[in-house]
Image (tube, rainbow over all chains, first blue to last red):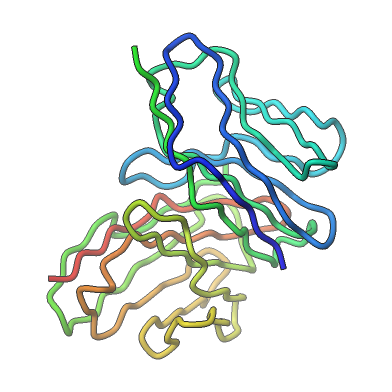
Length: 115
Length: 113
């Protein structure tokens, strides 16, 4: 079985400050980890993914995430938050490279960046 | 590349009627299609998985006779919500998968009155 946990329902940060959105995962094999962002009434936008290789993954819009195998975490980070980053963020995991398996999503974390 | 469209983007229907949602991959082909639904302020939940030309596999708790999935080609899949009820009101998102990538449609907002 595979699962992800996003422990925070909401994260508040001031514009210009660094942000972190937390995610931990549980899989029996090698994890394939993803971050998506969703704006109101919109579909998912891909931010980044970890398949293999460097633990620090850089993605779209200045976001990055660090894969930590010992802590089974894949936290999303950005050095300087923008008000336009305010949205709903989902962490997801897929067990293995086979795309025949669907993604398992976390419950989502609402990010609010204040001016 | 990797453009996915869903039609309609939003629909309002009366209880008891049926609604068909189309999902098209515009610049790639996908053997596998996932359908998700998302209730307000909740995560995406997988409803079913379909492979082109085969019957869909439904997740536990999802009624196959209520949510009819047709995956007739590598670029088109449809989800029909039959005899819709207000509790079916949700955001439905398709996800065609051509290989190792994971793409998502823009979603369809269904409201059943």
